[in-house]
Image 1 (spheres, chains in turn blue, green):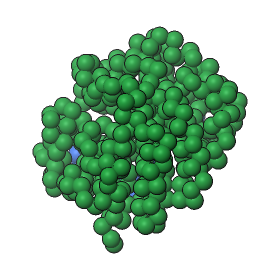
Image 2 (spheres, rainbow over the protein chains, first blue to last red; image 1 turned 45 degrees about the vertical axis):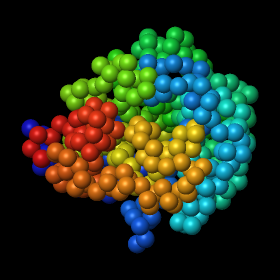
Image 3 (tube, rainbow over the protein chains, first blue to last red; image 1 turned 45 degrees about the horizontal axis):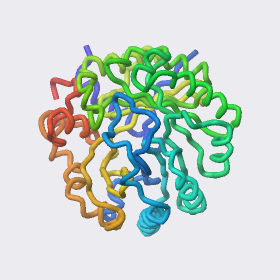
Length: 31
Length: 344
């Protein structure tokens, strides 16, 4: 189950990749 | 660090609505007035632009200016303004946000003359004509498709589609993602409908938090992950970039009071287009005075001022959507009605 604690952990992990006002979420579609 | 540089990033983002004139009357539009009675003439626009650039020079910041409306291509003074901004060394990037209907070959050629005008953002509210045209008006989907192919031929501009999600169209995201790939556009920006202006007449079209989660679930289906999923909560808008080797997902947190603002046709400044409270007018006040002196911006910069879950949440730069809070509760400091975390 998705919890606030998990959300917080992943927020801290992903919040440093910045491109302008946009943050890269580390998700790239593999086709 | 001086106050004006507090948490500010480069460039400073300006969304400038130069007119309320528009060829369309979309159901979710933030405007009530579609006249040019508040518009500034060429000298007024120049005065505003000088005001902005003087402060940004003092701050040693560059500017990213996106011109919009209404429909900005209806205003003849757009072109001298673009010309002036294009020649300013501190202007890093120019963009146009348009409904796409006036982008014929002649207009595209004319816009190609501005070297810093790199992005054309076009509203598209569905992945098929039926969904889009129910919101924007009959025939707009096909016309915009034709004009996108003209822009593509020119190979000069990045094309980014702008999708405002509401009850009527949120299930149209999968076909819209496919359409973006088929068209070869560079990006798709997804933002929620906030009921303002004419949009208040369709208040019931605001997504519920469960429907907003469906939108995010659609993004996760498009970007399947094996490991831990990123937190989507702090982001008020999402962008899918299609111009790399593979599509990539980006999120935008609320930038109110951080690195940008919105200018209205009469020079009034809003913290965000969707938070329609004037914090000054650039005909009377300098950008520096507005940025430093606005009590509203000051209040919104401090997370501890936020109410409910938003004030307690540990995601330090997530402030939820202040515009949604204002539109649905009447208080811009209230907790974000779309936050789905219950155990904050």
